[in-house]
Amino acid sequence: MGYLFLFFFLLFSGCATVSKPQKVTSSEPLFNLKYIDDFNDGALPNLVGGRMTTEVEPPSQISFLYDRTTTPDNKGFSLKIKYELYPEKPAKLIINLNEIDISQAYGISFGIKYLKGPKLEIFLEDGKGKRAGISLEKYLIPQEKWQKITLMREDFQDIDFNCLKNLILTISTPGVEAGEFFLDDFSFFGPPGLFFESIKDNLYGFPEKKKIDKKYLWKKPEEVLLKTLASDSWLYFKNLINKDTHLPVDWIDLDETKEYRIGDYTSPTNIGLYFLSIVGAYDLNLIVREEAVKRAENTLNTLKKLPRWRGLYYNWYSTTNLQITRRYISTVDNGWLSAGLIVLRQVFPEVYSLCSEILEEMDYSTLYDPVEGKLYLGYELNRDPPVPTPYHYGQIATEPRVTSLIAIGKGDVSEDHWFRIFRTLPQSWTWQRQIPQGKYREYLEIDVFEGYYTYKDLKIVPSWGGSLFEFLMPVLVLKEKELAPRSLGLNNFNAIKAHIDYALNEKKYPVWGLSPCATPDGRYGGYHEYGLASLGAKGYPDEGIITPYASILAIDYFPEEVVKNIHELMKNFDLYGEYGMYDSVDVHTQKVASRYLCLDQAMIFVSLVNYLTNGKIREYFHQDQIIKNVESLLKMEEFF
Image (cartoon, rainbow, N blue to C red; front, side, top):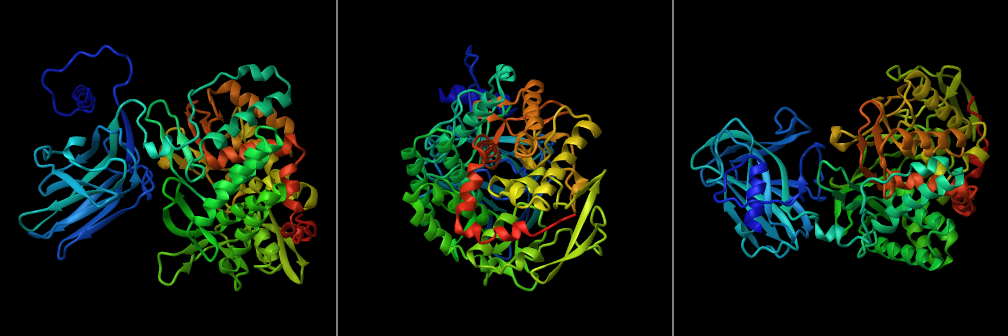
């Protein structure tokens, strides 16, 4: 089986021939790839949550960078390696594999463009520190073309593929030599359905069907449609949870033209929204109370074990081994985790103490700049000592306003912070999309410029990018429509109205909903920001990429329009899968991004829960004393 598979793998990847091939009549795919990294996003971590480093013996030097100009498929990036080597002074490129379990793999492959010289050896290192490898000398042909290197598992004797720690490429020369070469598409290959076993096998479930025809829902009553979509969307949180660590994975990709992928890392935002989703599933009778409490307790116990800094959580953790994948503290992500904890403790007294303990330890004063009166984007902990980012969350009409209210409500930050956040950027900042109009009003003895942009006859306090996500994600938990009818509630209404008009009337798109999302054609590393640029200080582009979650966030403001948009999305595009609507569609090409993102699925699900239960999630949030402490700030302001 292994050699037959190798023949077809080499044949299809344009590599060497194999003697005495055997005839295969099966129509089933003979192999599957699991990528370590295709470098297409031009950034770390890699696709298994690991990082990349170099080791060198001076005076030799080595560096790597992401390169757009030389790729085997003219997509994304490749990895360019530059070296200057001296005799007996080798250099190493080390790709961290995050202790993945890939025990079903037949071997490993990668692409290389290699024009001359150095001796290359590749090693695998397992979790016990054992290394085994092979020289690539007999495989490499210096040439202008890309070539595929395929190495069998047997080339790495006695390595434990159940726990792989590092892939190491060693580069050496007999004399002094400088040069460069390119790498791309590091992957393991194996039988159909190959996954990193510690990911897929440790999940409660996984989609069995790629696409589902739900056109029958068009003729069903609105409540049936919305409850069906909610129930299907909940399956992400029912199934895509690690059974050992109880954390949700960040995304899954079911693109039929590629191998299935799983983003086995998670963020504080994902965890907080998972808590909101547990509560929502309980309120919609999708799970019983016992299961809801058990799920919450399991994840809370994991949270207690995760490494933190001043009670705050790091931006990304591996869902399989809980390792930190970036030593960065994100302000907005911690805010959404806090929001989830607040709702959770209001609904389930069984977890109140544990939620409260975690909340109390989360110190937002660390993230506050008293000089600017704003929250930093976060803290970089790779520095010694740690330093805050040089940038702040400066605009009110963006998703971090939930974090600001929680920080004030906890007593970590003073009330005046709320009115030191810009409504619009200062009029003197002429680089912004529009020079704002408006006037000053005084709140808490602070002169606040109540500025706005205009879209046709609408006045709108802008966000950063002009996406619906920035305006509306906070309404998952905040009662802005009820408590801030002259400020944030009215602004949300106007922003939605502008988005609908822009997409349907100006651009003549069949559907609306511009926000950051997966890219159907895989550009920009598979994810990009989109918006109505004139509603943003910076302004995100519009490329005709529509995401369902963006309009569903608006359902409490424009229910008829949202339901119609759901109908049009399902009627015009093949975007419904086992876990509800996929993340985005290109209205020009009709290509669908067959990816589910934890964040976007949660925004769909929680929005529908709120609509179907008359705002229960928001009610729970506002029952908490932390939020009661700040309701007056929402009530007192008038934007226009």
